[in-house]
Image 1: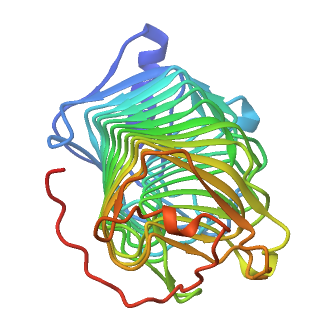
Image 2: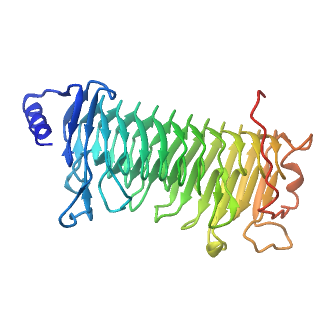
Image 3: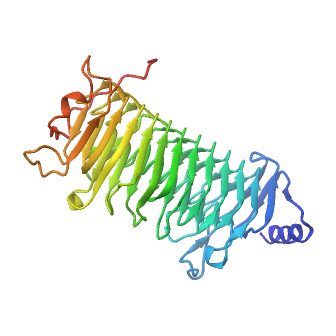
Length: 409
């Protein structure tokens, strides 16, 4: 670690790049980076590897361990700028999840920065950014075998992009934007592959403004999460402006939620702390071989009459194979559907529980048919029978039907 510090200091004085030759380098603490470019010989050749170190006393940030990681300066100290990391592996030795520990592969705040071509494994979170910060580009990385997330934009990360990364076997969300205390805004997660998050979701957005999730492939979530998720939860700031899910593909998504004893959707929207009433549009997504529902909109029973999900628009979506329904609604609010084609639906097209008050006027959740919503079971449209009045069809536990494998439309 000391050798890295000296090389970085020298490079900054001479306006040089720090080059890490092929080899394995033992680093057991954070390397602080600011206004520096660090390049390896490729992530199969240059490995920066560290042990988990137990601290004699907790650090000011609450950490009880430290380990290998490249960190920007704390946002409270102004953060870092102009950091460029590429072409090496970061291999940690994190043994347990301690949420206060800063034992991530890349961390801190670093604006106007790029992270590309890294291979990060066995840290707590591959890349955890504590903003405010802006204009970071994370691309072409491999992040696997994490105790928690692969990447999290946490608090006030803006105008940033995560693209063309491969994520597998995370203990929490694969890719996440969490707007705790300060909203994340104008960020994009695009063209990423996320496979087998063990707990939670493939890609999750918790609050924020004008964020986009597009052209991603998410497959095989394992427990209590799904492929795509938008949640008003974890104390996040409200969703405002626009939220876009566009041209994503999910495969074998929608796990069993053990707390609720029901199945989730391949995409699910969850109003737990606040309403979700921003401009939410889901366009061009494909939900293939969903274990339970393809689409789910839900609140928690304890707040069922407090919060709603309003005005979500689904357009040009294809659903191929569900164990239960095309759409499950367990919340008050509304959604519209246009050119949403469904086939191989396992139970009914719509499972509409609303807010579980079951008024005589129909469900508290309204579904609007804007046309072109074809398919379902047999020749009947998946949506039409459940529209007028807003039919209550509350059966969260129909027999689970194994969906057939997707085939050419």
